[in-house]
Image (cartoon, rainbow, N blue to C red):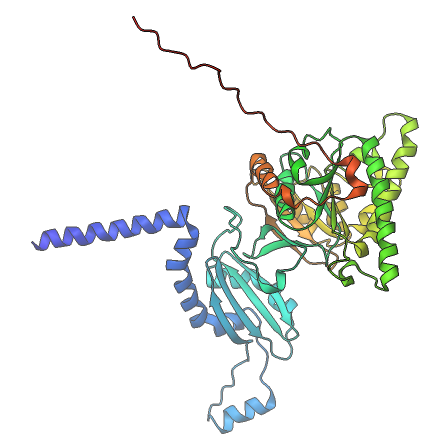
Length: 449
């Protein structure tokens, strides 16, 4: 009987160990919640003061504190003061701690020691975010959240809004969103098979669920955006159509400015809801196709398109027209107006590129430190990118996998939300419907012998 009990206990222990090993490899969220988080909480609490001391994140105590320790607490050794922990909370991806910085420390000091903190507490990564003056948040992840991307179920209240689209997952476990009211125009760069199309699918499907008008410019004969036709208010598939469509958009922008002027406001969102025109998002699939010309007679058309794009990028934000430009390269070699247009595209997302110069084109002018991160993206991780903005901040992101069929299905599901805009009616794409298979008029009778 004792031998049987011992065998059952041993089998149970082996099963539990095997289950934890399987969860660590296949279900890292479960393993982290059951094992990783409790261990990390204990290690963080037990070694916090010593870790901060050896990482150089302590300051000498004030004279009043030293006097109180020596005369009230009756201790001669006065310990250095580390940042005070205000709150620690765990999640399914990691752990977060709010720290109050003592006088003499700044967020850059904590950020410089993030790699040492990661090793000291045995977590996958540590990111430092300034919450408000004097307070920083340590965002610790327990595992590689970019290996299998799983978007958060709900967005924080500060990330919600009428023009907010969750697109990817940051490496600190938070959602990367495109907020068009804060960053109206964006540029997405990446080589072939880098995940650039995946990023566009997630963006378009997110926009399809919002009350906005989507305008596609795909000069590759529409091979990328033709499937989104049920949700598109306009689609241009050739440079000639793109030129005409951009001309109409400029006129639409000017009419909207007249509306704002008539009501004495300077922004589309200041208008009453009944009078507010529907926001428009212009999706340019391959921007190089608008710049490159085969013969000299096409240069005039090219210059007109570039001029209209620059005008939209400079002024259209106030009237609710936003640009999403995509391409493999976007430099001065494309021609006149390329750098001027790129300077207006504030939001930058750069996937794996073929050369360092392309990374410089996307992020060198807003976040120089991010250029090195782009060049180290491995080719076996499509969808990984570096996102930056004009504030100088940047982070690694990865979009969840989505097939073209799934994106087309979502666009068809929300086709009823496509606004009817009279000026764009000539460019409204024809939705192709697949005919149902014809049924035979008479059922064949089985042959009997």
